[in-house]
Length: 78
Image (cartoon, rainbow, N blue to C red):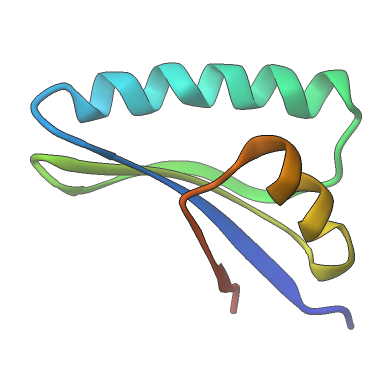
């Protein structure tokens, strides 16, 4: 089975949750418009001033997503 990569966008500050949820809307539009294959599309509160949005893709398609969407970081998904 092919390895999966989680692409992560970090949002910080007093309005981070609102900003993250808004950014997730734009990511949703991109994913649906491009008929993208993805897994585990979520937003998550880390602390009061740190919120993330992430989704998981197959390693073979990670570079295309990375280059187009510019995530802050990535990690191997378990």
